[in-house]
Image (cartoon, rainbow, N blue to C red; front, side, top):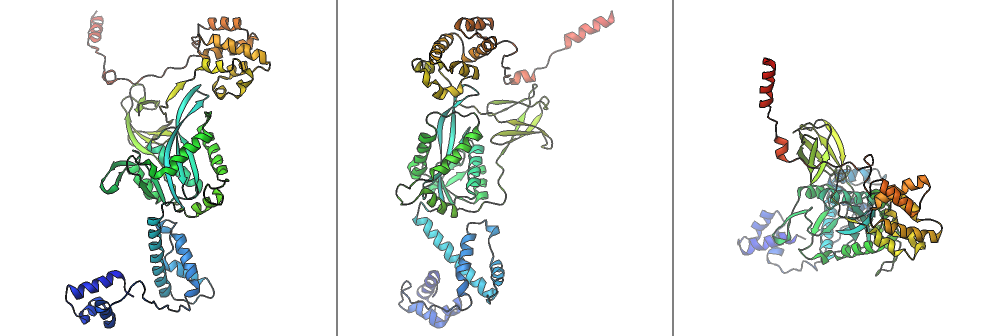
Length: 506
């Protein structure tokens, strides 16, 4: 039976071009009876009886060829089996007697069938196994190092088919953080989703064009090409189109970020979340009569294979050093000791570090940890301690306790409950006049002396300068960005030179 396009062309030649049957048969190189049948006859292409040919040689091996081709669809195109490779593999089977020509014909036919079936499936089903959705969320955490509350971003990738999810906490929503987190997730599941749904985040989408098309940023486009997934984007203001992942953002925040977590090391916290996401799959699916972990396996089996080489995520920037050896990137100041005044530098910017090269990109000068402007809130220590004034036993379970300086924590957690209550009162009075970091230094001195009463602490604080840190303990001040006028200023030595000449004349 001919393809529909061929049948349409025969009808066109007969009706519009007024060709006879012989001319049509010659032009299309088909039998005269076939040309007559489709040019003038009445036929039903859907219900036409198709003769099944017996395949005595290839028949027993077609299921194996189909399985290989379906497996190859998940591999990079350059690493897929060719007809010759399949023929070579079949020849290793002792009882295979087919020819290379037969293998090549059946491989081509099966490839078309598999690809066409996959296209139809993607049109009809939105939540096939291997399809994912991605979205950002935000939460607050306690930073013990800063004794502050810090806002973090977290990226969620969910799989609607199985109801499973992955999560990564990030310091920012920039392109390097987004792509590094996606790459890390792909490596965790050892594959790439076939399709990923996004909203119109600026790190991925430059502009929204007509017909729902998107102009993508160069970094995202190259990342997409490398990992071979299809990126779909929601309509503007229609976040419900990826409602599954939006629900997952709230689910993760409620279950693992409430109460406020303590994050002293971001990598450790992400490792903890990985383990928790795996545990979460061992529960019953809400609408399917099986565990999420069982459906998760279907998702994993539908993933694309990872490329042989992972993609390095970075961008290139340039900067010029001032006379203090400073450079400026994204409103943050970085010190490059090896740089000289007005030297042009090339920066290789990763999500967590900046590699600094000379102006020719030949010599690596230094590697700097990347700074982020995290939103911070000071902890109201007086407000927190007042909660435990009448509940001293509950202090050791307080979330904010992890953010307290160690000496303050040790001072508060006395074994005697009545003593705890007294010490809470002492701290509340001291906090009226001094910050908690100053009180921590005073407590360190008080522990060394063995005097922890209120009066001794007041005397130590007064001796330290009413809350001002000693010169040897003061935090170094970060130098501000040098203005351009100051950078370009050169001292005038004319008067000095004239004075020197007068001295030499005498």
